[in-house]
Image 1 (cartoon, helix red, strand yellow):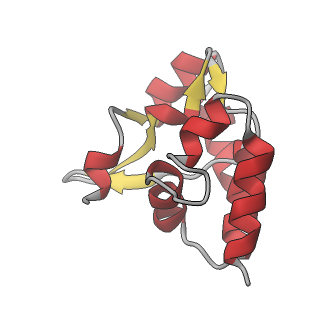
Image 2: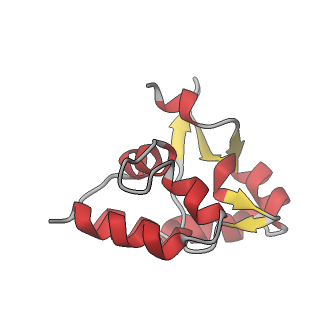
Length: 116
């Protein structure tokens, strides 16, 4: 499945900032700190974040930790987004949905297994 099809909606950095009540510069800082990832979409390319990374007006609890574990396992930002938005038989379901349900520890545990 194409990456574009995995998310219900893609948010630009300013759109995400508006949704979570932060400045666009703060969102860019989260990306620099690797606490958030963006993927480029469209022509010309625009840095975007899947709407599923937002829950109740904030970034998903545990998202930064999961992204760190995935990066440590060698996943690129695009691969991390794909993994979080794709059904996982180990959970079962999409990791991002488990995180939205407050099960971020289970997601990180499955992600840690990817490194081995």
